[in-house]
Image 1 (cartoon, rainbow, N blue to C red):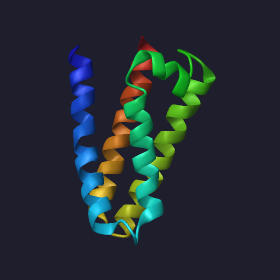
Image 2: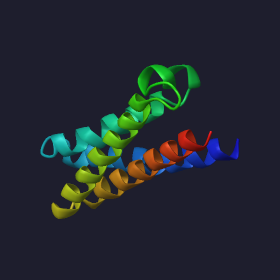
Image 3: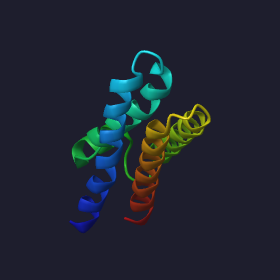
Length: 111
């Protein structure tokens, strides 16, 4: 239960920062905002255990770890690009999403 609360707490910051970024930069910065937003939506949709197997893959499967690693890579690239463009809200949100994906990977490799 504590793990779930920490995980949900990790996701509050990116939701707020991405909402603010879409409001401020929406039309000019669409591609860089789309990547972390879609990754966050996938992460939020994968919270229920029934959906996790469908969206990410079965436990200990190659598809699960490939999905996690691909999302980590995409949001880290988005964070670097956002930092270069000095869009700090998107960069911080992307880093928080990457940390959440690392958390998912760690939990799935231990359990």
